[in-house]
Amino acid sequence: MGWWCAQKNVTLRLLNIYYKVGKKKIKNNWTLIPGLPPTEMDRRILEFQERGKLCPSRDLIKTKEQIEGIRRAGKLNTAVLDAVAGKIREGMTTLEIDKIVYDYTVAHGGIPAPLNYEGYPKSCCTSINEVVCHGIPKEEDVLQEGDIVNVDCTTILDGYYADASRMFVIGKTDPRWQRLVDVAWECLKVGEKVCGKPYVFVGDLGNAIAKHAHANGYSVVRDLCGHGVGCKFHEDPEVEHYGHKGTGMLLVPGMTFTIEPMINMGTWRVFVDEDDPYGWEVISEDELPSAQWEHTYVMTENGVEVISS
Ligand code: MF3
Ligand code: CO
Ligand code: CO
Image 1 (cartoon, rainbow, N blue to C red):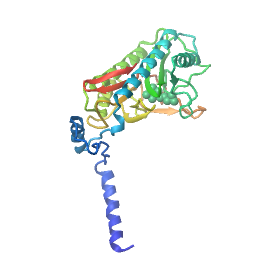
Image 2 (cartoon, protein in one colour):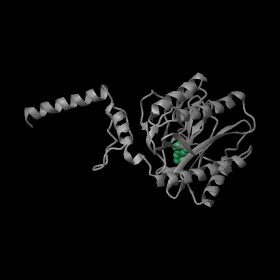
Image 3 (spheres, rainbow, N blue to C red):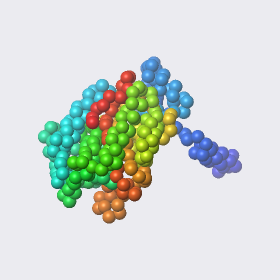
Image 4 (cartoon, rainbow, N blue to C red):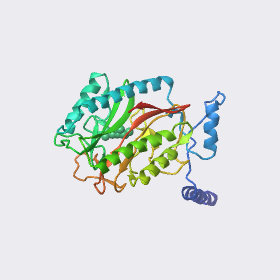
């Protein structure tokens, strides 16, 4: 290799370092369809992209047919959670909740997405008290008066996915725990409100959610986030529930995604128990309680609509 080439390599390496240290290089995901004139939507998105903003790729924009399919999956997923809501009570095991989810889903022509997903052994997640998410239903977990439990269901119907979770309070709980459950709900609704119009950023909703959580003395889990959903279980974008305005992906009409803030009473740090045979359950580091609500949304010209709750 001659001197010129070697010199060029050095320059390129320096350029790369500059890019990483200086401004984060953002991929130009949005491209025009060759041979077709740019639409109004193309123009709006490209304007953001040229300003260095993270834009979706075209495959994240669902067609009308896909959105109809995702809506049907969403209806069934909401009905599954309603079935759980009608039966959940003190003394029930989380394995019984799993059976309600499996039976109801299958009886209505759906498939519970968690079952066998990357080695996950059950049909839903049941996360009690200090369990932040991905709690595995089990025979030994008996619901007790005062427990706060998140039931997270994802349904596949005709190949389309919808994902939602709710908190259930067993009997009456400590008023401080009830407040955590209520503020977690408010955080979801605060995020939803930011998405009341298209062409907002994931960082806009994350920023608003974190502000609301912090104002109430709570923290936001950072290691897990919401996500695109619809044609697969987990798609782009990553929907972080904290961050700076104007960062993260631009949300445009036709995108389907979840918002699912995990709000902790204490630290935002979490861990996975080393003795957990599956390695799924996520627990708050200080073992103080955690609460979460999740909806699936579609972004429209007029802001988000709820697809599953
Ligand atoms: N439903 C969860 C989410 O909101 C994911 C659970 S993955 C599983 O993204 F395998 F644990 F089910
Ligand atoms: Co989700
Ligand atoms: Co979920």
